[in-house]
Length: 536
Image (cartoon, rainbow, N blue to C red; front, side):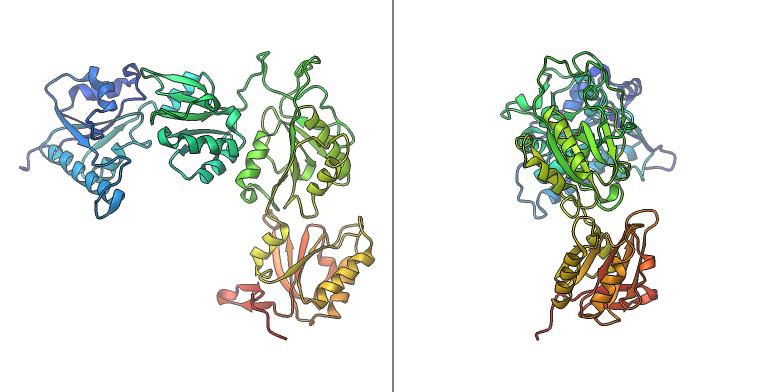
């Protein structure tokens, strides 16, 4: 190449989802004047991208057909499937580089958008730093699918998750459970696993199916009704916006009028959308819904499991202690029934009554709902008439003890006991007996509900009792508001434990005879209990 010869320009051009009329003006302009048109294809040699762009070709242009050596089949390449593709991308990019070095402008056609799961991106990574480059966006299959369904994908603060159907089934289910809206791409042979994942995530009834959006042979419908045989690669599963869902009257989805405040629901309970009086016609007997008791962990969204996040998103009603409800994002169409923290039984029955009317109710609990929390209250009520037939599920959450332990190091590394110091529901004599038994057994202790404004003596009494069995220098972790904005975790000795520094938001971890408190580099202190216990 001489010094005066210009270098060609590389263009990654999106041609949209299938209909040639959806090609952008810029894309059509570049396709018409390019020196070289390049496109990827499988071994059969046909290219969907070229077929879409054909009406914009002017003839006489050089064409580079970049044929994949493998698609889904096996290969004897020494580097396996990935090695075969890496060699192909390197060779293909060098073929395009030869044209660019000769001063020819190269347009690489890409279905949908060039940088969205597109083959062009592999050329881009290898060439864009060497040559002038322009990427022309295109209409994605996601946008096309939503348009053909005629329903919004996301609205307001909803989150859209895009998932390749080639992921493991459990991973797909977790992602589906944790999001508001979703699109699962690359169906074809993955369809059966994707369908099972939707069912496991409790989202199958909401899922829609779009095949060959904007192309010949387009098909849409409920995904649950699709025959898995013959599902093509050019198909997607869509979970559309919940906010945009309309009821049969054409009104935004809202709670039935009889979801009125009770003793468990203060008069200032706040539905995210006002409920129309005729939301549930009186002559319709709604199917039984369900109650899901959801553990939200000790603090905010970072502690939520995907399963719990999905249950909260899918609920029609949220029931819980107001402080815990405040941690859950407000969603249009959901009704929030907040109450005081001392009416667990009433709150449980209220949730079950809602479910009997056909509602999907999430009872919100901090930490794990089965550890000193709402699962027991709900199940106690659910085992009595008239609630025996109401479906109830319990979803686990990160416990306060485990969260606190992680901040300190690994104090729960060996056997431990969990005890609540609250004597509201059991006498102090029972608490003292259990503390003494655990101390004599040399168990690490996680002490919940250590103190409050009305309970000021328990921590001191527990400390004095434990000092009868533990050394004064036994490590004690004081963990307050773990995961929250005022988090404070520090370690003192059992003898130094001051009840005045402990409140209802503090959890105590009291070591065994084997628990170690070690200062590491930079003054960082860790507390840990060995997994090996010495022989007596």
